[in-house]
Image (tube, rainbow over all chains, first blue to last red; front, top):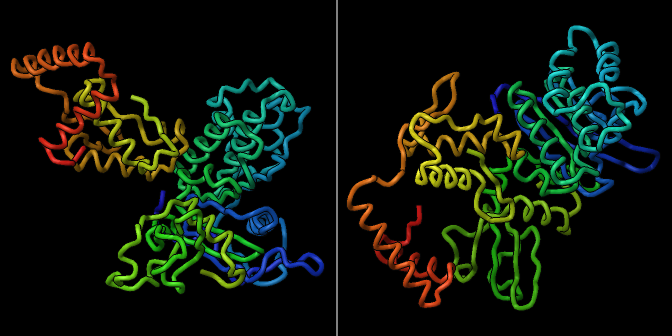
Length: 287
Length: 129
């Protein structure tokens, strides 16, 4: 939940180069504290690189990433020892963490609430149970900012909901800011209130989801897109006799011109918005 | 009560929660004094953003149906259940006999819903809330 106190992550012209290839370039965005943000983009867009820089595990080649407060990072590999029992994993994490930051009782309670017997070995847990143990360990650090890299990858639908429900419920209770990457929009659509969209190593769109959706319209009309002002179009596509276009509301004539009066206009869904910005021809610059 | 979220319905999620709560109030599964599930419980079960739950609860509060009590939770203060008056009982009995006639005339559930919806729209206007 938004508490309106400052910025959790501020990236300023952030760049990371591997050899000749820029994995991230000129990334600038702010994530207000208390938000639950989705970091979306195709594979190779720079999501993991951005999370690792924010976690302090990678050094940027250019620019800066400022993070306020303590950070918990959950890598996609989930970094658990498969031969350890859950209880041993909890104890080990307690030893590795700074004592003043580790809340072992809280981590144990989360594992318990997930109905996981702590005597079981990590390798014997289902992927969903393993994910919940990993989230419990990350939350046990009581982070101000929780970074999750594809936390739902390879989970079945029930486990996806359980893991996401756990993250959202615990983060909102503690006022934790969450930044989670995903390339499945349906997973984050109802969960996140903030969006950071990466494409080709650059931030294409970033902001509160409600405001972003308010700033765009989904227009439908006869094929050819007659009447849709070209300068407003993010992406237009034609199927059969119908053209659909995602447009920037601010670039539409106001009051509506006669040419657009025959078009059906709707507020887009998050998926409409994300798909348009992932496919539009403009590959550089921020929206 | 337990909320369900239909992700592909096109109906905004907070509105789905509001509609389900009102339905429970009409059917009497939620009564005055009952506590709505905490936002945390709904979030854990449905994996939707906590702000969505709070928005739904605020809307129910604006409608005077529930009341948030600091530190305790959100409680039902008004029901939408039909008054159990003689007039209501008579209407119900008439409708039951009408429904039996519709069934024996070969109408199915969807036919009946369409017919009732049409007459209700004409009587009360198009507002379905």
